Amino acid sequence: MEKFTVDEARLKAVEDNFKSIKDRVMETAVKAGRNPDDVRLMAVTKTVESVYINKAIEVGADLIGENRVQEYLGKKDELNLDGVEKHLIGHLQTNKVKQIVGEVDMIESVDSIKLAKEISRVSVNKGVDTNILVEVNVGKEDSKSGVYMEQLEELLVQIAALDNVKIRGLMTIPPICDSEKEVAEYFSKMYQSFIDIRDKKLDNVRMDILSMGMSGDFEAAVANGSNIVRVGSAIFGARKYF
Ligand SMILES: *Cc1c(COP(=O)(O)O)cnc(C)c1O
Image (cartoon, rainbow, N blue to C red; front, side, top):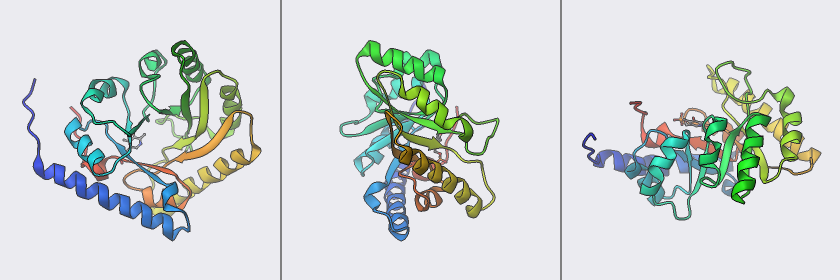
């Protein structure tokens, strides 16, 4: 194994970044007339070594998001996870469901009935309930996972009938946009359908979480109704892929 040395300057940067992003989230919420306590800041920890994740937790991160099942299971024993909520936010393959159910508090990236059925089956077997968000492909991009808006309600109704799966809301990653105004339109569209579905009060469909906004656009997301922003590089620095 390669020798790993802790970068003290990076530790300090994680602390400073986390605090300043947290402040910006709160300020944006207040400016938008929202209760700042209604917006949670998730630290997205993919590719980040445990020591830096633990620094974020030490300075207040109480929600982390990981993309890959294997990576999360490999790191979790090194993390100080007392009081920290864990979400899986990356695309999940059906054959990995067995490993992740029961290990995280929420799976944010459910986008098919096939995946939801497997989550249900494994949750029943393990005797747990699994909270999920349905991922929406709001920009209809081929490169992205997620259900199209037009199919969303039908999928929600199908998932709602499954045992041990608890629908809690929606998640999205909008297309890369040239302007803040353009991305805000996607967020606003998501918020509108979040509210529409919530108001329909479908059986077994709770709509209390709208997860949207990342390092480059979390302020636009908060201004448009997000209640979880998922921030990685703005906290931990640019990702290095090995
Ligand atoms: C990586 C990732 C993020 C965070 O992206 P940043 O631009 O680094 O903030 C958020 N959500 C998902 C689903 C991701 O994969």
